[in-house]
Amino acid sequence: MLDPLLFQLIAVSFCLLLVAAGLHKLAERLRFQGILAAYQVVPAFLIAPLSLLIPLLEIVLGLGWAIGWQTGLVSVATASLFAVYGIAMSINLMRGRSYIDCGCGLSSAKAHSEDNGVQQLSVWLVFRNILLIGFALAAGGSMNARNFAVLDYFSLIAATVALVFTYAAFHQLLVNHNAIDSWRKPLLAESSAGEDHD
Picture 1: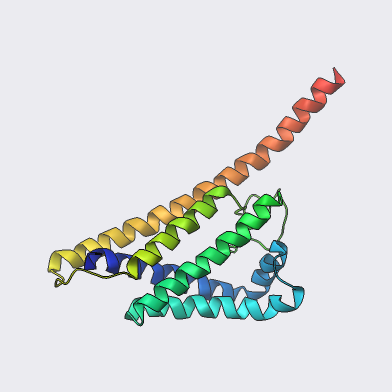
Picture 2: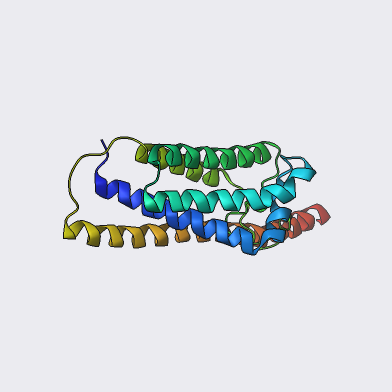
């Protein structure tokens, strides 16, 4: 059984994550359409409606976490959404198309490997989604019956802030990794060309 403090931490975190992601996608809808198209997992005629449906779904789910509406349904729907994201990433990784933008931060709609701002697909993002699926499903289970104390509210705020910074740091590390790889590739190519010339 889940402690109410842990449930509230998961609920607040998913609310912030999903609402922010949905609003960002709506604000950058054309760029999001480009990212969806780059995945090459849905027919072209579905790109436009999905670019509206996905962010609206994320916002609805985020609000569902916020108000505690139909927790079981919201948790399963959230887990299913991240599972779909993870499957789409995995399909492209198996195709060898790790260079495309994951769309997590809407850094770019361009599918190329030389843009240092692109957060490219990686196994780590798939693992992240698996972790998010686990948290979503865990929050859909039963909870211990206890009242929130004052200390619980302070703990919730502190833990939420820590998770936000940890999540942001994780994604920044992935972006930095992509940038470092893009710097190394020209150097490795020049080194190989020099060795061939010799």
